[in-house]
Amino acid sequence: MRVELVTVGDELLLGDTVNGNAAWIGQRLAEHGLEVTRSVVVGDELGAIIGAVTEALGRADAVITTGGLGPTYDDLTRDALAAAAGVELVRDPALERRLRERVAAAGRELQPMALRMADVPEGAGVLGNSAGSAAGLRVELAGGVVYALPGVPFEMRTMIDEVVLPELAGETRVARLTLRTAGLWESVVATGLAPVEAMDGIRLAYLPDPAEVKIRITASGPDAPRRLEEAERACRELLGDAVYGAGDQTLDRVIHRLLGERSATVATAESLTGGLIGAELTRMPGSSATYAGGMVAYATALKEELLGVPGQVLKEHGAVHPDVARAMAAGVRERVGATYGVAVTGVAGPEPQDGRPVGTIFVGVAGPEGEPKVIRPLLPVPGTGAEIRGVIRRMTVVHALEQLRRVILGLDAGPGGEAVP
Image (tube, rainbow, N blue to C red; front, side, top):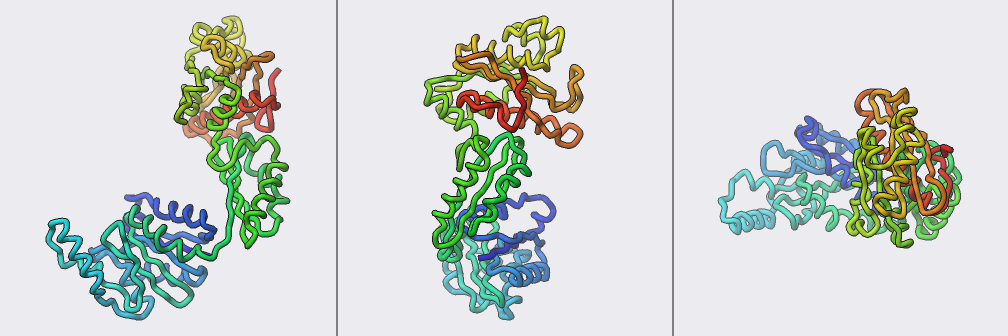
């Protein structure tokens, strides 16, 4: 089942309103095994709406439109669908009665213009809107069916779930799972999973974030659950311990689970991230059971005063050095009294620091056994200018949590970084 989206409204074209409807519909339909093949935005112009809908039906089995069903004269979706079908707009008595009842119940006077919402293309199906006034439409055209929905987000979402999905997804057999990886580049993940791409009934999508790549596995066919299980097993075997979770198992949740299983805690010492690691580790309710606390030692002097980094190390090497990360991790673990200490220091940019180029990061992790471990994440420096800073800081958070996970599990530094003696 191929579906195309047509969202209608000048406010979307001009940027006054962000097109959140298209993103939500695409995600919702994908969850139910429906392939969204194209999404377009058109303004409040009759010919543009007619053209977008008819062109979409030349490629897709169904089209979903949002917007243009209100009472004002720039709400033209119903007019466009009538023109595309070659029929007239007719007044629906049941819709008119419902509109009058809703207005009366609200203690307001019905404006004649509002009755436009009771006009429908002749022969069209009326889709009930339990969340608002504007009814949806189901119009059969040459090439497929059009579902016209209101643009108000909560009304549209209600109708998608109550009307559209039961019709479109009723015969779809699909199973889906998302795996999560850290430290691998998207191209490396995709290359490694080439054998899975070749499996019958399996489709992979790669969803990259800074220092992370999610792999959405979709299996289709009458035996979709079995195919999905086989594909997941193959992905895990090919990617190894770079896979840290699945579904909603975010990296912070995985860390808290691992610590909880061991009755352990973690403390953080941050320089360039300025508290972002601590913020990530306190996102989840109940995180106080395993996150003991942290220190933001941004100034070089505070690294010595608060965390016990040797002054001679700072004097000789500056703040961005593996020995500094090592000492910060050990220092925060000792001072807070946690099982593990994780620390980061580096250059977020946009300018070099202490002779180190932008993107130089050191992550230290101290645990109950052995000396603190330090890795240098292999970061691709993203572009130029001030935007580098935010991306590098986010990648540093992910690498710090990933290295903590690896130390807890007794794994090596992994493909995302190189161990520093």
